[in-house]
Amino acid sequence: MSSTHTTNQRSTRTATAAAVDLKLEVIVLPVADVDRAKRFYESLGWRLDADFSKGEDWRGVQLTPPGSPCSIIFGKGITTAVPGSVQGLFLVVDDIEAARAELRGHGVEVSEVFHFDGVLRVDGTNGRVPGKDPQGRSYSSWATFKDPDGNGWLLQEVKTRLPGRGFSNLDVATLTELLRETEQRHGEYESVGPKHHWSEWYAGYIVAREQGQSPEEAFIASSRHIEATRR
Image 1 (spheres, one colour):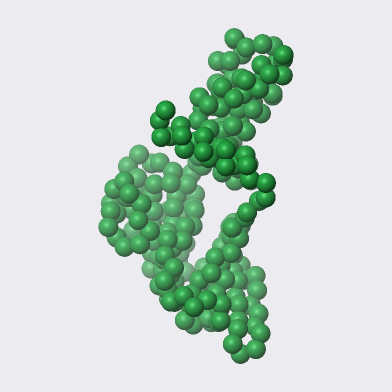
Image 2 (image 1 turned 180 degrees about the vertical axis):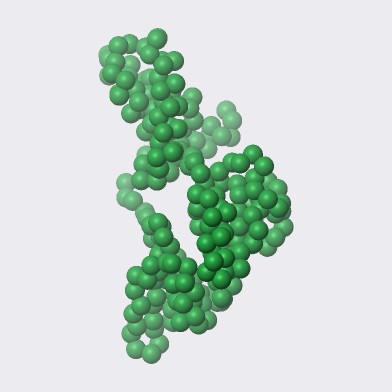
């Protein structure tokens, strides 16, 4: 059994066992100057969700990047972490060059686009190779920038998402590709399997793929589902 197969099985069991959603929605940033940080992130077009205080010793500012379900919060009295100590914050973009151009238009210093030599590193410059990923793969082209305190952000280009992130993360391009894959694999099964409606097999296959199973595992899972319902 390959390590990939083992990992997929473990991920599937974990996803199936989870009974309560755990949604990452807020990341705390340590900053030295609250107003400066607020001006910086607002200048990027991030939505200001709240700016509230309690006395002179506590203040919280929350903003959300465009299109993101996760927000950032910073302020006074929120954290004892050293300002600028948070590194490796990911911002996923469809077009990394367009994202760089927009940030630069806001006066932000952004690195050139790069890819890694095979090992992801969220801080420093070791392992970076200039230019986009030579194969044009999603998840593999990057750029970086920092806020005024030095907290580090990574732009990651994702044009097509891998299955396993849940239906809430599907976009049109990803779903289209997954449906085409499902159609192809169903064609292989339809000629040898019992009579069934295509939607039953499609549903089983897509759910399995979204749970992180490989195409071969999803094929088996969906086929077993059909056969079980026909007994």
